[in-house]
Length: 67
Image (cartoon, rainbow, N blue to C red; front, side):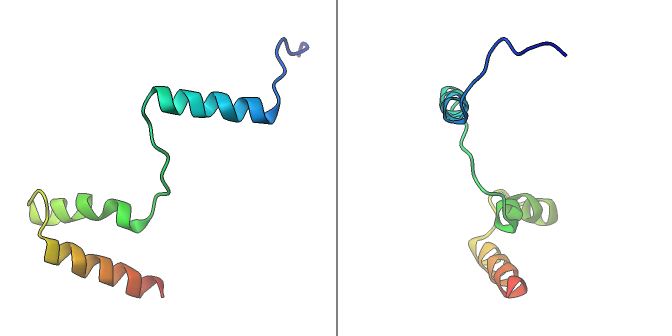
C-alpha cells in the first residue's frame, strides 16, 4: 500500500460531511420504532394517512413496551 496523497483532520472531514448533507438537503435523524408507524399502519389498514386515534394507540403501545 502506498502513501496517502491527502491527509485530513477529523474536523475537516466532519465539515465536508456536513457540507455534503446540506447540499443534498439530507437530514440525519435517529431511527426509532416511531419512525415506522406510518409504514406499518398503512400496510395493515391501507389508509393513507392512518387515523390519528390509531397512531395515538400505537405510540402508547410502543412507549408502554419500552418501559
